[in-house]
Picture 1 (cartoon, rainbow, N blue to C red):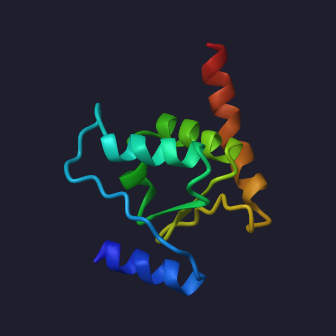
Picture 2 (picture 1 turned 135 degrees about the vertical axis):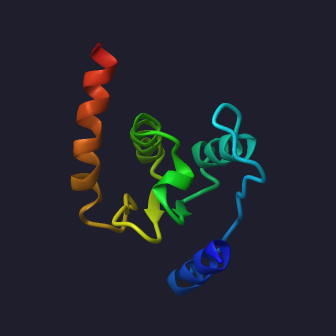
Picture 3 (picture 1 turned 180 degrees about the horizontal axis):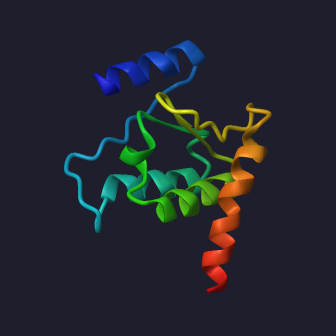
Length: 110
């Protein structure tokens, strides 16, 4: 159901889609996720649409780190079921990303 709903969401937005679906969940090794990030960095991805953030990032630290990485690559992150939208078309995305950078900066200085 999640994949079907995500495809419907993308269709409503007029987006072409590529599915990155992890077959097995493993905290240490996520080859499909790693490929998604490589493709995002290479400019092959404009927006990452997820069902829920906890399906995307395994911890708050991972979420903050990856979201800031994506922003530096100009790749948006949108959760279909939560109020997360860091896409370039969202005028509030910079406002949303600002607080995420604060704890990340504190963690990096420790």
